[in-house]
Image (cartoon, rainbow, N blue to C red; front, side, top):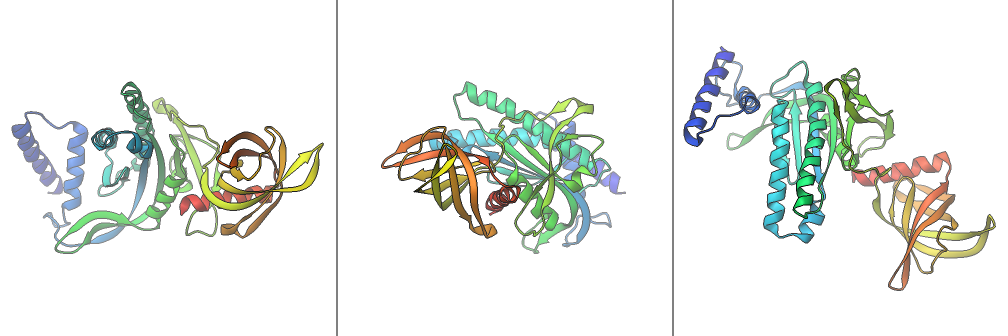
Length: 360
């Protein structure tokens, strides 16, 4: 009875769309429409008017467009809106191709569900195929941007699999079908940690697809709301489908804004010079930092650093770095420093600090 309801409803809606527009929906769009109808249907075969919520396992894909700040600052609003809509439309096509359900758009982000409202045996596989093709689509969109002399726009993607509460949330006045739970929160944290052009997946997702994908070794990261690190992997490729993530950025880590006092001491013949140069850290990453100084350092020279990491209650000391870049800014100097000698404990604390700032 349920299948008959779906087929009849899809057929009638398809006829209505064809009559009004003169075109028919693709197979992927028809599948999406069937999923929507299934989500609206109650167990007794009618359209649900209640707010029944049930636990179910889903794979959540969160994708965030990066680069629209630069686009907004250099282009008229109409151009920015057109570019955003073009990106979201193309990404939606990929989602429908793999029978995902778009849960919501959040500005320049998109949340997609695999396993709700309709569950299939290959939900995880399709979610990862979707993620890779989304990155491929962004590469193609950026080629169009280059032709139009627009800034590039990148995509960061996080994928997590877990049990959520799924159903219609709200009231008799307004309700919508969605999912809530810790698995959704973790997917959001993973997406925030992804670099531009990267797909990061949780361990729970990897355990369900390890035979399908090529992925990096596990990395331990700290996320907001969890005292223990979370294991993540970078999705590299899906060999059986000849799909590879076209990484468009090869930074080794995030660089996050951080206004922290910093003490620098020059090195001369491998000896620390007593004179202290006071500075302020402008941003920091896993492997270095950008610091504002009241006096210049020698390019390519080595310095000793000391500074506090307040979020992790740790004082960085006996860390050495090389001056990679140096430029004047008004009465100050801005130096890009790369760590050359740092203990394992200190490096772990720096990574934790960066990850927690990303989560905030």
